[in-house]
Amino acid sequence: MALSIEDIKKIAHLARIEVSENEAAATLTKLTGILGLIEQMQAVDTTGIVPMSHSQDLAQRLREDIVTKTNQRDEFQKIAPVIGNGATEKAVSHGLYLVPQVIE
Amino acid sequence: MTNNNLTNSSLIQLSQMLANKAISSVELTQTFLNRIDALNPAINAYIALDKDKTLAQAKAADVRIAAGNAEPLTGIPIAQKDIFCAKDWQTTCGSKMLANFIAPYDAHVITQFNAAGAVNLGKTNMDEFAMGSSNETSYFGGVKNPWDFDRVPGGSSGGSAAAVAARLCAAATGTDTGGSIRQPASLCGFTGLKPTYGVVSRYGMIAFASSLDQAGPMAKSAEDCALMMNVMAGFDERDSTSLNRVKEDYTRELAKPSSSQPLAGLKIGLPKEYFAQGLDDNVATVIEAAIAEYKKLGAEIVEISLPNTGLSIPVYYVLAPAEASSNLSRYDGVRYGHRAAEYTDLMDMYNKSRAEGFGAEVKRRILIGTYVLSAGYYDAYYLKAQQIRRLIAQDFVEAFKTCDVIMGPAAPSTAFKAGEKVDDPVAMYLQDIYTISTNLAGLPGMSVPAGFSHGLPVGLQIIGNYFDEARMLNVAHQYQQVTDWHTQMPELTMPKDIA
Image 1: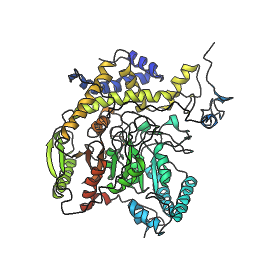
Image 2: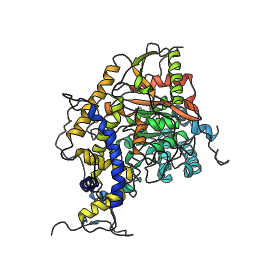
Image 3: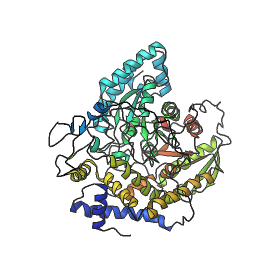
Image 4: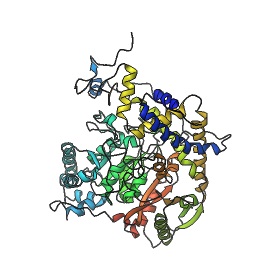
């Protein structure tokens, strides 16, 4: 199936990556090449073959439902992103992360 | 002993020198740091150095050695691929997205090296999020191949590869999702091992394609790789795919009594697909000579077939991007990593932060992954790829009925020139034609120096059955007892006071 510029924009939206008009055309060319490579799979008859997600067929390990982590909020918030151009202010306030308003 | 001999010594030699106080860990570490100062500005193997932290570890190692409770790697300076979180160290995964990320915790691999008393020399350059085969996708610039500065070291573990080849560390760690330990080991001329999937914990190793990612050692010899494996391998409950197995000594097979035919009875399978069109003639000649050497060691050659080898690349470029698109969705600019300076609302913040933080190849793979997982395409791509993945794994099951190990080239050519494939993703992807299928099957694979073509190293790949690393290491070790390819190193011009 051939991709269009519109497809690229739709995929980019799903992936939450801004793609400019110029980039979209170049991306289309590259992705079309990669999908051409992937297309070789379609020639293989895979009827009845069980998909393989992992090399070792193991069941998911379970553990006791007990607390194993301590609170490291301050430690983790030290690496919060900074806000604005050239600013050094961390995107945290009172232990919360700051983001643009999401609820009206 | 000159400093050059020191940086060229095996891990066992260094361990012995440290044990009988011929040298201290601080002196050894400083020797490597001086060499890094002299050569790294040109090679760009390391992207984060912290001499205070490094030397503090060396001092602690000296105390431990003096107290008499040293382990084999206590005091030995190791380079860590920048994909491993190391507490209070810059950990970037080669990306602008994480350029300012200081890891708040240690990866399991780092914890293991710390417990063994090893010294962290620094964090090594890599393709961004391990996506690449030339180290050219790194936000921090390419890495020079120490054998020829116009050429790439391979990737994605390109910085670790150059560091081992240029003797800028005693040994290094790497990770291998589709060949990222073995292809650079081949292109830079040293020994690298990707273990069986699940043997080394992925905890704290920044995720690319979780069902394929596996860490392993990159070192000067098979023996050194075995010592590294003793530290790296082992069960870790924090990785849900870590395998709970009895702890192994990976050096146990190396001590086997040597005869003129130490590998008598070993059956080596040669897959015809690994010697077909696409393999450089000179590389083929080197590999054939290595196989001839193995016959002298007593091994028997068996012709085998891995008929689905050609499908491994299409399958990989569905599965790896699909898993990557999911793994990399965590980089949203909210809690850590790059956040765009300007945005209008939350969606715009996500879109711009990710557009700015990721490089071109990473974006391509996220987009491909998003596409193959999107509504209506899942069965045609992802499910189909998982089905063919089973066919590829079954090829190996069949092959191992008639042989003990499989051999062939690790890469289709020697190191290529920087810039040569950077604009052609499909040509770059073909670099991993001989390595990807072992990742898909979850099998262990190695690259071992086997000779040169026009002055550039060629690696022999050894693929083993599940959990057969100890035997593979001995198969490589016996070859390294009768050849000296692994001891050869590039000529590098050093300032007089350091060389």
